[in-house]
Length: 352
Image 1 (cartoon, helix red, strand yellow):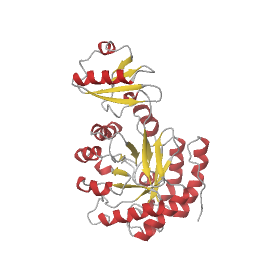
Image 2 (cartoon, one colour):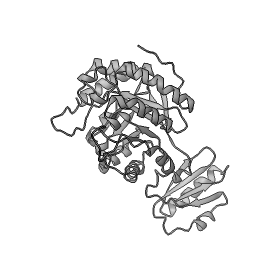
Image 3 (cartoon, rainbow, N blue to C red):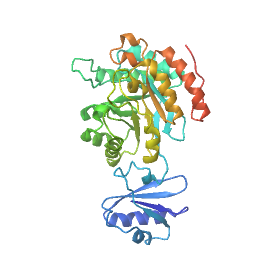
Image 4 (tube, one colour):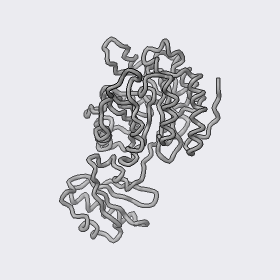
């Protein structure tokens, strides 16, 4: 349930009303929009009469029920206003959200060595990326596949962060590693295989770094948004949803099926920012440029693209990785679409 306050409502009145809701056993959450303040009510609200609530103050404009099971993630909860996630990077804050330039995340699937990760970081930064992605801990289908270098890779990510000024996005697989990952990462990633690891989602939600939540490979949109709800309910409002392809009946030509229809669907359901990962979504580097372009045309807030200096020798996911030169060209091509819809950052692309 949400309580919409009138424009110009006094702060003292908003606090008084909020305290009254606390006395009722509810948890009020104040959401400050561009023009109005909305109070979200969390708790047992089924028996409450919206008309009765509206009578407690002349400053209440409207009282509405949130019909979706994902309450905090619902667009209704913010009264139709889209949220933004602000990430503090060495180069300054980067805003990810609907009304901001597309934020590009790029880098290798796994951190392999210091020279590789720093070289890649500098190249993708020069092309216009705002974040470096790189796995320190890697979930793999086979126990015999490369699992990442673990804690030592975090030190290399820290070195790349310092050398490039990029923000760092890396995945957490075990809650026991969350604190040390949080010392390096600017955004904590929850991967597709852990999307419904509810105990991990609660722990991630209890810390204050922004969270990138990838869609599970067989997850419905409702399941995905309910996973986001776990993070939000634990106290962390900074969640970015990442579509990375889902499993369908045809896996012959692409690794997954990239579901770009989630962009208009999510826009109608949730206020949370949206990222598209065409690298995992297709599994083939040749298909990444067209899907990245389509994602921008469909109004994504962010892109995640795998880049490796030598994909043929990558320890993981080489076939879906672009070389730095191909990434340079892709960023130039994407800027044409991005500028057309006024969603591209004002940067000069420097080709090596």
